[in-house]
Amino acid sequence: MSYWRPWVVCTALLVFGLFPAHASNKARNGKSKQASPDAPLTQVSAGVAESRLIEIYRLIGAGQSQQALVKASALVQELPHFQLAQLVYGDLLSARIRPLNQMGDVPQDMAALAGTTVTELREESNRRLQALRERPLPGTVPSQFLALSARTKHAIAVDASRSRLYLFENGPEGLKLISDHYISLGKAGTSKTFEGDQRTPLGVYYITSNLDPKSLKDFYGSGALPINYPNSLDSRRGKTGGGIWLHGTPPNQFSRAPQATDGCVVLANPDLSQIIRTVEVRTTPVVIATQLQWVKPANARMEIKPFEDALLAWRNAKTAGDLNHLLTFYTSDFNSNGKNLQQWMPTLQNELNRTGGRNIQLKDVSYLRWVDSADTMVVTFGEVIEGVRTGWTKRQYWMRQGNQWKIFFEGAP
Image 1 (cartoon, rainbow, N blue to C red):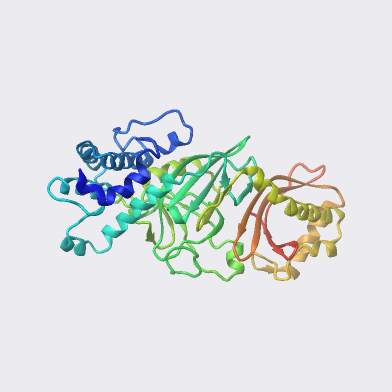
Image 2: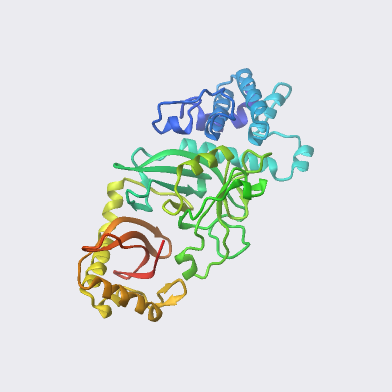
């Protein structure tokens, strides 16, 4: 099938032999149960739909056009709103009567009518292939996840450069990648700064709620998980806006272009449904990065030591009950829900009075690090006074200033 070669050369290099046919997300990450590649898509995840598309690419690259056409026909019949699959199916049909020069080789007049659609579908295909080819090394985690409390059951990381969301399970041996999914981000890219800029924020966030799909418009698909943008670092930098959600797609659309949202993170509805069933509100962190850096957990732990020393010193100062010493751990522009450091001092004094010189224990500590123009640590913990059964759950934002770590936000999660 020589007339496919111009765009198949690239596709074959990416696909053929690099990952197994029909490999679903779960199968690639150690799950033993694997759905049939020809199972009805209403019963399997969007990851299986993606793996079936990749298998079609593999068959094309191997010159097995008829087998590819059969599988593409089945895929678009089962999922007619999967536009990328429709494009590949159209190419396969066109290739039976004329040579093709590229993926989505639509006649020029038709391409003009389609606007940017064909270009966006090509880019979606490239992003899916890139993410499946460039898999994270086994046993590695995104560098932001330094340590998570056992109370944090799952974590999410988004890689904008690959249009990919990674879902982790947190167990006794640490984080384990359990699935990953194609996503769409902001029309104007990332680094959200103000309301309406159509950008997706970058940083460390938490899922704040789970919105009932019955209360949402069809546009949001199978549900929505809002995150806490703007977080305390965003607010410190003057960033504005809100309403950033992880949500699904309209019923007539399987997936969206890599950059097609007003700032939200959008997944295919089956993928979002899986995430909604899995994660917990308020305890699940969501890291959104331009490009994730994957590291060994032991290396990440080594990065914590200087900060752990600072956190321990803060705890010891609080145990000692010396307010003036304790205040040296806070930045001059500290802010807690509208209270500056002067206004926050009575709260600290009340906590010192309750402590009464007794030891303070920090329990269920989680550390997440965000490094851009500044080095920031987001730490969540339970603060319990010795001899007292309950305590406070706190979240602090620390920033490194020279060789010192200082707190610029403290409050409830």
